[in-house]
Length: 304
Image (cartoon, rainbow, N blue to C red; front, top):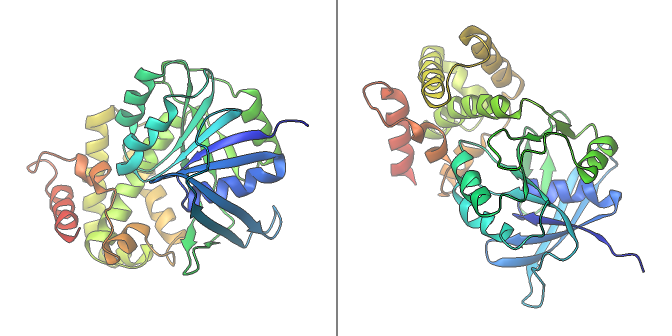
């Protein structure tokens, strides 16, 4: 009997389940690791690849589930930024030369670098998701829109660069081009997403605004927070490869197109969950240079 091709998914939330559901028809069987160890998850997607409507996840913990890495060809890491360091511990026993796709918001670069130092023989990728996925009451997920992507690329800070996709990665990119995109410039695209998330999520969460579009009610504040985030990113990573005006218009277009979307970080605040603010506005340590970002971040810390 031919051995099943295995994907290790670290994180059994919406993103991990979505990716596993998309990969299943390609013959890639996913094994999940959750916060408490190996988890059995039946990840199914209703509809077809052109019209996905719902992601059904039925997880349960089973002490007999194996967490070994035998047969693993690809690792997907899909956890919140504050869980990333502990999640990446699971990569230490992988076979060499396995690609690791780390999807996540915020400045997660230090966590990946630390893990890569321990396993420089793995192929470390940087990724992000721009799909909107809502959590439903029955532990299933609804795809909010058909626009978006699972972006992944060769991260220039990785010790084992492997700048081109490996065969298993190529197969996914070719079979699912609507969902998975390879970006040669993933470094700055990921930082641009940091910029957009820092502005939108920080404002929505700190001000308890349920939808992204609600931040448009105070355009002067939006512009001021954007300016601070732009300057902070420049301080952290150097010049942006686009003008400030271009970036601001990208921000406004994103807010407009997602105006009715529930803001995920505002939802986390409402539900009393921790947020990823430490990896967004929390990077602003200088109150004099970044008064708005530091103030909004402190508000979020109090609310948590």
